[in-house]
Image 1 (cartoon, rainbow, N blue to C red):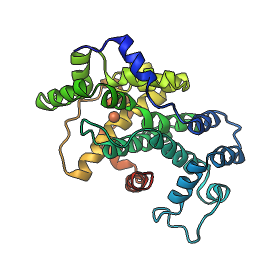
Image 2 (cartoon, helix red, strand yellow):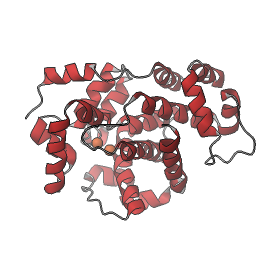
Image 3 (spheres, rainbow, N blue to C red):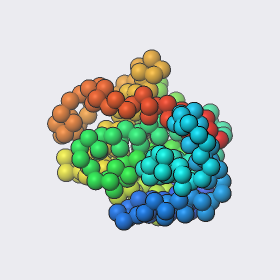
Image 4 (cartoon, rainbow, N blue to C red):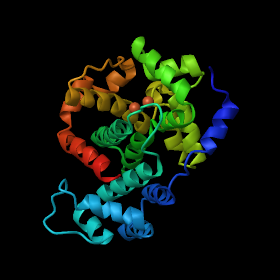
Length: 286
Ligand SMILES: [Fe+2]
Ligand SMILES: [Fe+2]
C-alpha cells in the first residue's frame, strides 16, 4: 500500500495552483519595508478576494459601527496584520475543494488550520519573534496539514484505511501514515509547498511539524508551529468536550515552553476571540 514517490509527484502536480494573490501576500509579508498600500493593491487586483475580505470585515465578528466599502479603509480600521491574515485565509481556502469522497471534514480541517496559525503566532509573539517570524507562524499554521488534502483528493482509499487504523489503534495519524503509506502528510505537505514555491522556511516548518529535525536547535518558527498544533487540538478538546490524546512533548520543548501545554493555552487571553474568528471565517468564506 506504500505510495510510490513518482506517483505522489504526479498527484501533487494535479493539486490546484496556489493563488497568485496569496503568493504575493506572503512575499510582501517577508519584506520588512512592505507598505500598506502595496497590500491593498494586491487584494484589489483580485475581485473575488476583495469581495470576500470586505464581507468578512463587515461581519458581526469585527463589530464595526459603519460599513467598510474599500480595502484601504479595512486596513485603516483593522490594521495591516489582520487584513493580511484575513486575505491569506480567504485566498487559500477558496483554492481548495469543499467536498470530498472520504467524508473528511473540511470545515473541521480549516478550523484546526486557522486556529493553529493563530496560536503559533501568539506563541511566537510571546517569545519575542520578529514581525516576519510572526507572519510565517500564521501561514505555517494555516498550511501545515495541507498534505492531508492531497491524501483526501488523490489517495482516498489508502487514506481512509489510515484514518480507520489510527483511530482503532489509538495511534497518531502521521505514524499510521508512515507505516501504511511509507510517507506522511507532513512530508507530502512539504512537496506541495515546494511546488507552490513557498519560502524555504515555510517548506521546512511544514515538513517538521510532527518531528522537529533540529531538536532544541530548531527555529522559533518550527517550535511555535509544533506547539501551536498541539494547543489547537487541546483547544478543540475544550470546545467539544471530547478527549484528545496528546503525545508528550519532547523534553527540550517542555523546557522551552517553561510550562504545561494547558498553562500555555490558558495564558493566551486572545484565544476565545481567535476561536470565534476561525468559525466566522469558515462560515463566510464559502
Ligand atoms: Fe499534522
Ligand atoms: Fe495539525
